[in-house]
Image (cartoon, rainbow, N blue to C red; front, side, top):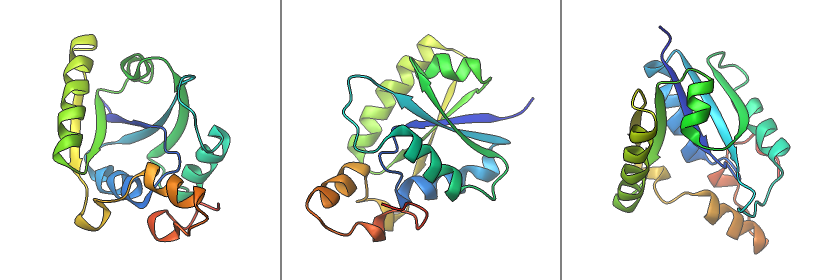
Length: 152
C-alpha cells in the first residue's frame, strides 16, 4: 500500500519553510499531496490559481509531489485521495498545541489517519505566510523568505 500524505494549508504564499518541510518529508512517503484548502470565510491575499502555479513550479522535478485544491474537512479530502497521513510543520510550542488539538480531532473523525509533525529548521522558524504578506503590504521585499519560483 502506498504511503500517501496530505500537506494541507493555504500557502498564501508558500514560504521557504513550507518548501523545506515538504522536501524533507519526501523520503518518508511515496506521495505527498499539497492540499490547498478553500475557505470562503478566510480573506486571501493571492488567488488560488497563482498559489497552485507557484507550487507546481517549485516541485516540477519531484514526481511524487502534487498540488490540488479542496473544499471541506481535511479528513474527508484525505479519505478521497486514500491518504493515511497528514503532514504538518511545527515552528514553536504554540504551533504544537494548536496542531495537537487538530490532530486529535482528525483522529476522531478518521481513525486511520496519522498526523506526522516535522520541526522546522532553525533558519525557517520565524517565517510564516502572514509575515510575508505583511512585508508585501508595506512595500517590503520578502524574497529571502519565499522560494525563487514565487514571482510576486
